[in-house]
Image (cartoon, rainbow, N blue to C red; front, side, top):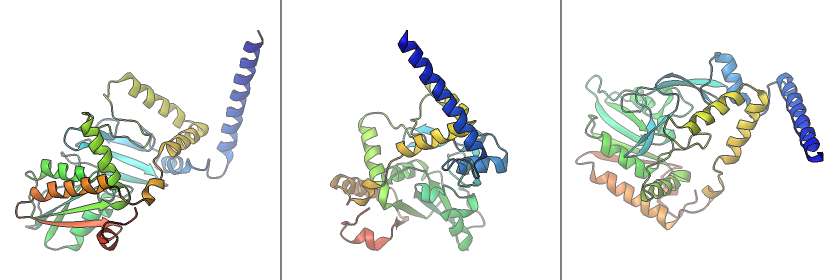
Length: 297
C-alpha cells in the first residue's frame, strides 16, 4: 500500500538525517551549541551523569525531596557533583537538607540565612555561598545556609517555622530576589489551596513523583539514553529551553496578590522571631524595593 511505502520512506529519511546530524555534531569544534555546558564538563571530570547535569554520590538519584511544610528541599544527607557551565561544583547537604553545617563553632553567635538559589549558592561551591563568605568575614557570627532553590518568601517563613527550634541563633536574614520570588509565592499558594503541597519542577520541568512510579523511571531512562548522543543532548537542551519560564513576566509591576502574599509571609516570619533580630536583603536593592513598591521586576 502506498501509505506504508510513504511511511517507510519518511522513517528511513529521518533515520539517515539523524545519523548524519550525529556525525556532524561529533566533529564540530566545541560540539553542539547549547550542549557544551554539560558535555564538556562531563568530559573533563569523567563522571557518568544520573540526570541532565548531576552525578549523585549519596542519597537517591534525584535532587528534590517532597516536604510537607515548605513543599520541597534537597534530600537530607545527599551529595552530588553538578556539571554545568563547563565546571563541576560539589553539593553536600546536612541532615535537614541544606548546605553546610548548622553547629555553632568557637563561641560565635548564630545567624539563620533564608532564601532561594541566591542564598543556597547554585553554581557555587560551598566556600562561595553568601553565608559562607559572611562567616569568613565575621569574627563574632556564624551564618547558616537555609536556602532552597525555587522558594519564595512564603516558603522562607515555613522553613523557619520548622528549623528555628533546632538551630541556635540570635538573628535571621531573609534574602529574596524581586524578579521571581513573588511569583513563586503565588505558585506555592496555589499548590496549597489545591491540597497538593507541592510538586517541585526540576530543570526538565518534571514534577516530583513517587520514586517507584513507572513514568518517572521511563522519563529517567529516556533522558539517560538521549544523553549518550550529540543529537539527543541537543534535543534535551531545546526541550529545557522551550519549557523554561521566560523573563517576559518579570518586566511587569507586582500584582496586588503578590504584594499581599509578600506581606503575609513577612508577618508570619516576624511573629516567630521572639526577641531575635530580622534583616531583609532584596535583589535588586532597597531603593527599588522601597519606592512605594511600584517597582518593576
